[in-house]
Image 1 (tube, rainbow, N blue to C red):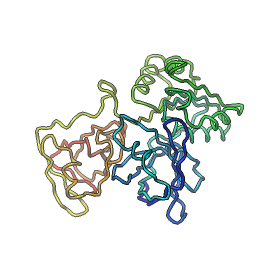
Image 2 (cartoon, protein in one colour):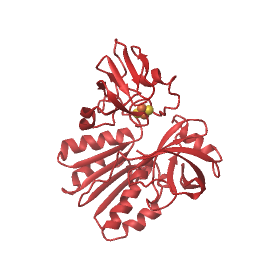
Image 3 (spheres, protein in one colour):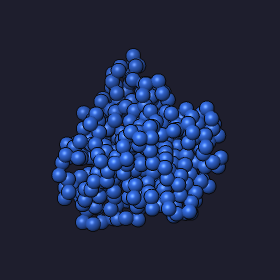
Image 4 (cartoon, rainbow, N blue to C red):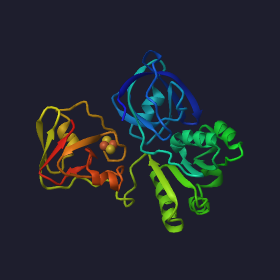
Length: 324
Ligand code: FES
């Protein structure tokens, strides 16, 4: 995990209907931390909201690039970016972090829904540079809402690339079961998009291609009933959290989140989704036994008990020691 940096917004550009890209420059032009395809950063917006955006530029570009879709029903972050004159302004970022690494494979199938193209774009560039076969299926509400299509077409013109664009108003939704069924045996499938789309991909893979290597990145909470979404804190027992950096102790009351309990003592803690799916509040565990309720950590990471999402996680022991 990388640290915190102040960056200047050097450019805002329209990439498609409803989507703008932002270029972020390091302080005095200094280089920003290295990153790999699939990485994201936490952006602290002028209002104080924290939002995650995938890096969609090129890893050897000294500036970062992110792209933001205006989401009328969102929680305010995208509207703030679209409605604020940001060029020349400084914002704080944290990261990069990467929980969506491009794992080695002899071939790739990429599936993007809407703004889900952003983490996949650097993966596709990387795959094309390596000369590995790939195909991208990219869907959106209308053709004019699909971003980066000129670059994607250029990449797909190389011998190993394949691009199919879908718009809901003309083609209907992405034919996910058919795409998953037809995926080459040795391919890895990387999908990013709305939770409903990812649930359909997962369902198709489990039914028709159980051996297929499938990786997801989601931008929103799972709809209820899918993939064990974060459960609410329902303990009827309180527990104690020790903040290791000062030795202070906090009691977490029944039904209260650890995040809410410790925030008065650590107001600098970042959080965003507060539902266990974004990773912003991930905190190192130094003692005690956490209960994991997030949808980020995999089974091995949960079993290690070395970190937890404190917005939803609980405690199976009487006391938890956190690196705070
Ligand atoms: S704030 Fe998003 S996982 Fe905790």
